[in-house]
Image (tube, rainbow, N blue to C red):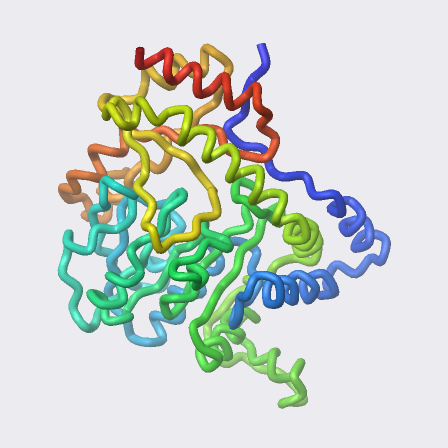
Length: 367
C-alpha cells in the first residue's frame, strides 16, 4: 500500500546546480547565493529590512535580544505554538505569560489577557491564518512582534505578515512552503533597529560597519551569536524562491480541494476548520480539521489506510517544562483544541489520486 506522507519538501530544478557551484568553487563562506536570495526577496516579494538566518529559531532569539535591549520584562504569547517561540524570550530573561487562542483560527485571543504599557505580545500566525492585525495594532498599541514562521509571502491588507510588528520571524525549514534545508529570516520594522540587529547577527561585533567601509576594524559591541544562514542553505533557498509560483499554485489547489471535498462535514459541524480573515491573502501552508472528540481513533484510521496526518502543537503551558516554570494555568480553548486538531497532508508531491483518497476516507469515517 502506498503511504501518503504528511509532508515532502519541494524539489527545485536548480537546487543541485547551485549547491554544486558552492562545492566546486570551495567558497563556503562566500555570500554569492546569500546576496542573490536577498535580492530576490526584496525585488520579487517586497521584503525590506531583513537578515537571512540559519533558522526561524535564530530570528526569534534575535528578537528576544532586541526586546531585552529595550528593557522589556514580560511578553504575552499563545501557549499553542512551538517551543522555539517561548525559548527565545526566556533565553533573554523575559518573563512569559501564556494566553489562550481563538477557536476560529488558533491565533491569540486578545481578550484572554490585559497588556500593560511595559509589556509586549508575540503574535503567532498559525497554519493558514493570521492574527487580526488591525485589532492587534489598536489593542496592543503597536507593542508586538510576530512569529510568522509559517507565513512566508502571506499578506494582510496587502502587506506582508512579519512586517507589522517591531520584529518578525520567517521560517525556511524543510516543512515550510519554501525551504533552505534549514533557514529563516529576521525582519525589522525600521533601519535603525536593523543596524543593532546586525551587531547581534554578527556575534556581537560591528563587522557590518567594516564591510560597509565605515570602520577599518571591527570589535565586540554587544551580546550576540552566529545567526547567519550558510551559503549552502542560501543556494537551496534561491532555487526554491525562483519557483515560488509553482509551489503556491499546487498548494492552493490542494487546499481548495480539501475545502470543497469536506464542505458537507464542515457545514454539518461534524468537523471544524479555520475561518480565514477576509483581509488575509494566505500562502496555503496548512489545512487542519478539528474533531468533536479526541483524535486517536481518527489518526489510527487514517494511518491504517496509508495516510500520515499530524497532530499540531502540544501546548506549552502544561508541558513538562511549562509546569516546571509554574507557567501552567487554565486555557480552555487551547486545551480543548489540542487533543482534537488534525493537520492533513499538504505539499507539492500530492497527486489527484492522493487528495481524492484523503477526502474520501474522511467522509467515510464520519458517515
